[in-house]
Each structure stands twice: as structure tokens, then as C-alpha cells.
Length: 230
Image (cartoon, rainbow, N blue to C red; front, top):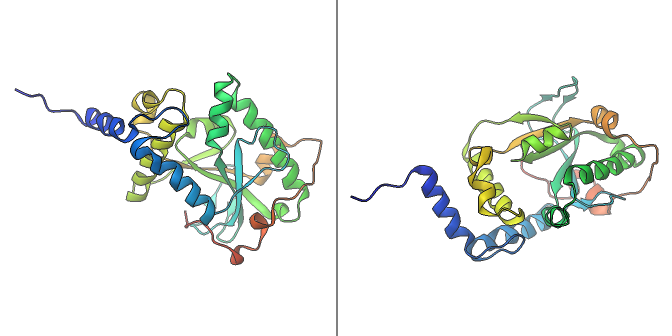
């Protein structure tokens, strides 16, 4: 009698089919849809590099907040319309750093220090109320000082989980093993926040670059597309 596959075994088989002959940083099979969507998303919602960041592990998009009011851990109240610095990982840069056996947490902290310089100097950046990201790597965000706020499990969260797991498969050295073992199997993406004041407390640097982001990232929100409300 044929044994029925468990739920985790079915999921593992599905990811093997999706991955095909995918290697770290090199998509094959159905997984080619992931970098294609990344490119399309960059066109719809442009991001830019952090000025002066030595490693380029993070990208920025400045946008107004459109969700419900949020109170952060230090008491900062984020109201609709508040300006956010939305962070996005440069997945390929992180993969290359890991391939060189370098510490991505230390590198990310250096990049965030450069972001703190810019936030203190740039006229647009002075209006930023908080840093925000949506990530499945909530433990990593916690280590960097962000407050993790889990969200209800909705259809959108399930789709985000599916997409983020595909990114982990593509941009990690472990490949399939990265999403089949440990806590990642059941983890859903969370919103992570860091208020401006807390961010500067953690990452303030004495050297201030005063450099500006490209115009596309600092235009008034009404003049360009913004991300869907969180």
C-alpha cells in the first residue's frame, strides 16, 4: 500500500519542482519568475542605494505610511501620512558577501551607520519618522534593533511567505535546505519597525556625509507610485 505524503513532504516536493536546476544566485525552471518579479517591482516602486554605504546590502524607498496608526516600542506614534524609509535587501550583494565568508550583520550595521548620516543631513530625510520593512528574517531584524510586529495570517501573508521562501532558496548558499529545516518552514513575514530616534541612538555616526538620494526617491509622494498600504 502506497504511503501518503505528509504536508511537509508535499511542500518539499513542490519546491524541488519549482527550483529545478537552480543554483545559489542562478535561477532555473519556475524559479526564474522570482528575479523577473524583482525587476518589475523595481520599475513600479523604484528604490535607491544608501548614500555612501560601503557594502550596498540595503536599498531605500521613501514613501508615506497609509496603514492604521502604529505605536512603536519607544512610544513613537506613526500616523497615516508619516514619511517612512522602507528598506529592501540587495539579495545578490548579501549572497556575494556570504560567499566571501564575511559577516553580513557587521556589514549591514556599517551600511545603516551611513544611512544615519544621511537622515541627519538631507532635507527630505529629516522628515522621516521611522524605518520599516516586511521580512521573513525577523530574527535578523531583531538583532539589528528593529521591533518585530507579527501580522494576521491572511491570503496576502501566505503569498508573501511563498515569495520570500523562493528568495531564500535562490539567494542562500544552502538552497533548498534553507527553507526545509529550522524555524523558516513555518515562519510568516512580519513587519519590522525602528523609530527615527531609536535608529539614531543605535547608529549615529560622527562623520556626516550630507549626500542626497537620486531625485526619483525623494520626489513628493503624490508625483510617483507608492507601495500598497501595509
